[in-house]
Image (tube, rainbow, N blue to C red; front, side):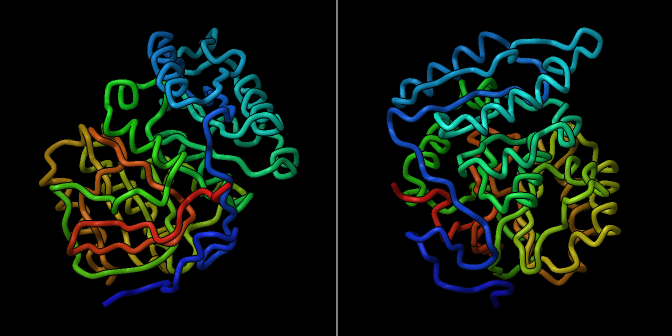
Length: 327
């Protein structure tokens, strides 16, 4: 039985099957992408390698000023909050930039949410935004404030992109030809709770979503959403706390289904599975397990804000509408 939103996709117009998310244009060779560092400091060699891959795709690449900075007192940040926020705002508002790609995660995106010029960002034309992990905070803000489709993807200055051809190809296809992407899933994927569900994709890194609770202007998943969750280096008891916090905040009240990604370095996967069953099975919605997005080898690029179908029994998440518009 399929729960949630069901409708035929409209692959040409800028109107989603359901909801009001806007799709930016896809990329073409010669387009200009800007690399930003909104969170942790960057390894220069990985940044150089990632930029080289992007240029091999025919893209014009620039790196935001200050991207290789490190905060003078807080070494886990790529420079001062005000500078990281200014670099992201400038990249988004530059009319010559077609996509803003995040270099890495770590920690720091939460700190700049209230320093971004949201009026200027909203007035600029829609453009591609991609990243994952800590960048979940920016995905959620762009989704809630602008209603924009974004890409939960490998990040440019990370080995998950530079040393993983499968992950890199998934991002390339998502940027240039999103209609060619196969259903998302892995050989390990399957049903935590059986069933099928259709809805708008929403979510990202579980600990970041919990950390965002109470942030003004950031809403829980829309009714009928497919909620995506993944995490890294969180022990099973901490995952229990994170999911319980989201449950208490009503984040699962109206979801149609839940798609679970990777749980790298989160302890024994059997223990993680037990936690998720305990916390989520009683919701009465399909729950897919180990679908191959997040901190994992071959990390899939998953669009947020598009209609998709979760088939927990088959272990797949199928995007029903290309994330980016034809040009």
